[in-house]
Image (cartoon, rainbow, N blue to C red; front, side, top):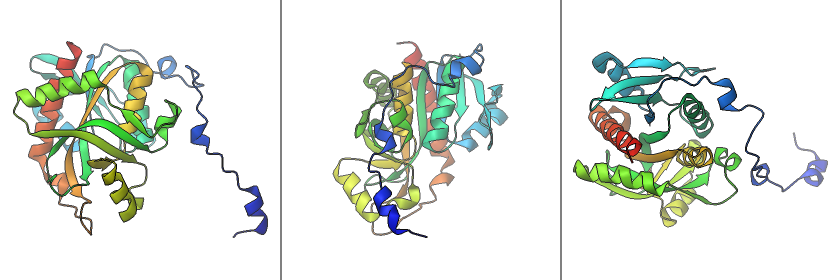
Length: 266
């Protein structure tokens, strides 16, 4: 119910613009998360099915449960190319993904490659097309608690180049470009989709800008690659059964794993 006095109480100041650069917070991950013997190289993936296959087929073992209110988001270890690799089964959405990254950094991981899926904003980016993130438009809230307000957050250029070099060496077709990170997938209006596309965004997802901001704040290396899933480039949304392409998801994880190990060697 609206009241006449509500208009007089309107405060146009936006809390997300009130950046506090204090290096420490009330709850510091390093004070509450135990440091462990973990691989420095880590793949962060949103592909629960891929993680399940790592456990079933490659004997991945749990290093830490990372149990949140919605359940565990385990950090696992698997052997890849003869070396130890950490794998984080990440949660969807910027706040959860950023919080889990914080915990894994506190655990001891330092070199990250993120792999996930994203909506395509261009019709020629077909199902399964790989996109390396060069920058993320900050249409979410989490990143503003780590970096001063700005429209974009740039990807870690050195980490991105290592990822691109691995993709190139493996003859994996990809493009590099910006992504649009949003908290509200059910408010991706036609006008916003068109505006973000005009700004150069190739894809839309929910975590990239926050993960990049946390990595920069904590001083760790992080690169991100997504595959194009559903399609938002037309007059109607096309789901394209994007979560069923298990071969694409397995391939992308394998590439991300190789890149994470290469990043740890730079």
